Amino acid sequence: MNITLHPIRCREPSELSLPVTYRATDKSHLVWYGFLVMKKSGEDYLEAVLQLDEEHGKVRTTDVANRLGVSKPSVNRAMKVLAADGYIEQETYGDIHLTEKGRLKAAQVYFRHRTLTSFFVDVLGVEQTIAEEDACLIEHDISATTMERLASFLQSYLQRES
Image (tube, rainbow, N blue to C red; front, side, top):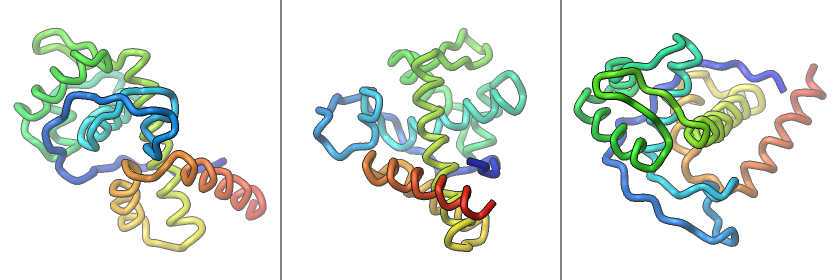
């Protein structure tokens, strides 16, 4: 599947919450791979760290703050929560590194974002900026079942179109 990747900027994240576990029967897409559920802001931070790491090879608090349009103290608070939950590692005033758990979670969120954006642009003809914003809103709330079917449909659609 060929999906055009664009840097994203989701709405301003709020404070992270302590994770809660859900059963596999729940509708939450966050259970896809048995991970703890986190608020949208936590996913936004992980997604930003992943993108910045892929773009620049290193991630600083300032980079994350600029990407998400939040203050450095907000990023520092979020990174402490993500580190405590095992998603990132960061030494005091050092670069931010995703753990294996964090990289997998961030990749899941980014996959949802890219898939939704591609669906909106390539299938529905929505303008790129609007598609990015809408994907940012939906990526956190879409169920695993719907996301899986959407990704499957998009892959088939794009193969037919090429």
